[in-house]
Image 1 (cartoon, helix red, strand yellow):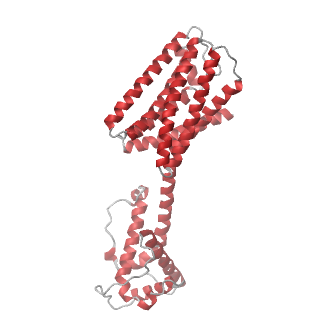
Image 2: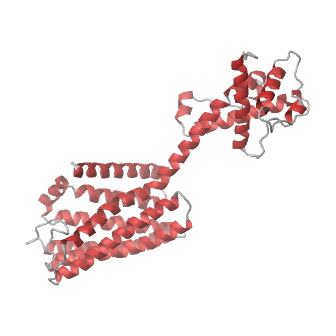
Image 3: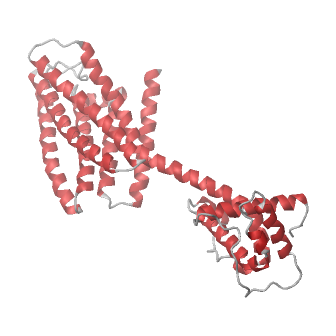
Length: 386
């Protein structure tokens, strides 16, 4: 049961991470660094899935007992290669130089892959399959197989670890947090591969190794892979959470500004900003739609206050530092807007409900306080807004 939950959780984690990377890649298909990360995750996911007994059994029946091990290790080598390519493309001055460095690393990968294939074929007559803990590492072919795989992994992971730490030190959160998680996972994987390299050499020479050491190296890998997924996905997830938090705040402020906007929009409909013709349900589904409506409402409220400001009492405008400034200004605003005489459009505008810090968000909060006062006044029945 625990194994089933673990496998299911890993498949969901890989699916979520890959879905996010596919979404990013669709928006930037020419981004070679992003493409390398996506291929890295694809290789990792395939390596994990094909190691599950049903799939490993099919591969073993087609290619022999050592085929599942060969396929899984080739995919792991591909994973770390594409991880290196991410840094190669990120640090390259242009795509051409990144491609040249990636081709050089691909040559080393090809040599390792050929060596793994040859050693697997050499051990085919007496290979019983299984993973590192179950393999007969006393066999020279299998010992060469694991030495080749682990040495390449130690090299590639060590290079990736150095680049990851350098980028993490130069980055800011949330990217830095994700990179440090990736660095920890890569360091753990490199440590496990180094342990396995030493164990392989000792077993090949006929030494005895405590089973606990082999188990520990496997546990390190089992922990490092999910941590790697978390680190790769963390910056994007954190950014989306922050964006959704901002969207929720803007939605709340948009609703708070409603009473003030309705009051001013009824009096000065000509200040309504032009809206691109679109269906309301479509605009609500667009991620930036809420932000556009929010900013538009803030601007329309401010334009309306500028228009009505000559009719407000200057003596009361100076009292905005008091707790009742919003209620006093709401009373003046409602009274001025419900006068019957024409409102002068060319009078000198004065500052009304201005924040102490000049920023759009502070301006919106100041307008929201005034809008809350208008709502209270309307609910109290002092004035009716038609």
